[in-house]
Length: 213
Image (cartoon, rainbow, N blue to C red; front, side):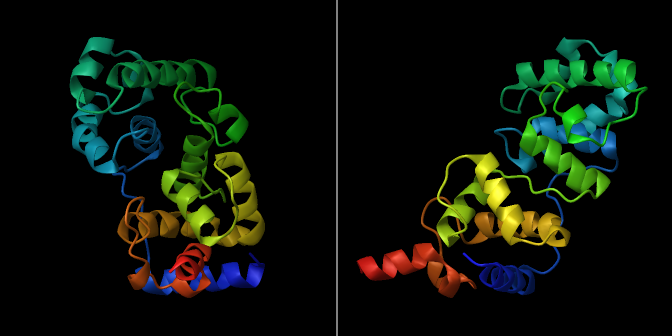
């Protein structure tokens, strides 16, 4: 990989997909944070199906911090790992109310202290909520980074480091969204649609397949 090749990939994907928005539905930092915690090992569509009811009943961190866990569990029951997530979002809310004066912190070190928030989730909150340049690495981005040829690694932290070296900081947020879109539409986990891919000429995976055939 080179920075020039990375720039070409970004430009092609940007032209192909256009402007991309997050698939999670939210209208403020509170809703984004809770939706991100709920989205772990669950589709955005499934999260979006439960959050309207959750946010109607508990519209902010303060209300959620006072919630009965059984009531929260009943609302988010269709989401994977709902018992753990119900506990996490209530305890997270308690920490923000008590420890941060009901204001979500915008530093990754502080976000990582909150229940249910790992590095990927923290980076999503920073980039989508605060517009702070960050590059969250989910399964789609991990797969694409390895296939295209940015890196050969199954470790998200290493992938994040390489992507942020090759991609300019001002493009991190948009690249993150473009890669996710690409992973859902064409560069799927099973049977990627390489023949339709706009960056197939710049992809190591396609070149490997060509050499095999």
